[in-house]
Image (cartoon, rainbow, N blue to C red; front, top):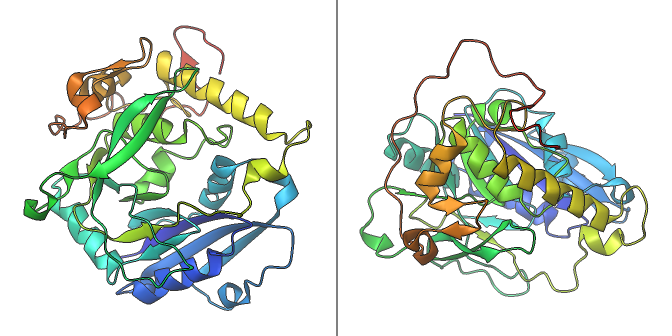
Length: 328
């Protein structure tokens, strides 16, 4: 089965090793189409990727980059219909047979539109890679000053006894596996900079009828520390068109608006479930900045009811409609 793989990379020396490992560890590497957003200033050698027909490299001057959501949106513009969609960061390592195992897990959920997502265990390229780690769940750890949820992760209790992926409230943007329809139905909003990316994806996917799960096997590892490696905000410190702070502030305001007001279509909620249904399922109140005891404790949620059919046959318009008239 075909898998479209999205890899966003900002001046990252781990890009080439990540893509090569993705191909090497797949059971069916010829079923992969990997598209890389390579934001660079020159000097990095990606010839190994350019030489592989399974990999497409989208090249951008790092000085013109507008952040991670912008980068992922550019990749999705190159999407061709595939059975599955995998989104990872450019500093990832993979488990043997990750493709076969992810597809099998998705089928185990019994959901029509499952999403498997987590914060993977860590690896360090300076240390010999031996694998290991435990599967984790994502939980609400607090709120930002402007009311966006913060997330952390810890191991799934009794994961060794689990026979199928477990229900999740939230998703991680750095490891997300979904049916290929996800790209068409929940496309990336490039006006979000960084903060708010994951809750935006979770709410929109849920309201489009996707069910959220955490895998109960370790299928990837992520390089979190990345000391002395450049980030977008380090390069974009001067006020101007691409000043990171202005991009971040505008993106956060946009996410906050989308969470708090009734908007359907475009980059708002989907037509299958309501935002109220997501809030009830996740046990979270975006207006009051509160959550249920179960959500705060990181307890696994019950599976949601099967999504209903979308109302009407016409797809939502690209322009968002707001009953509250809120700016976005």
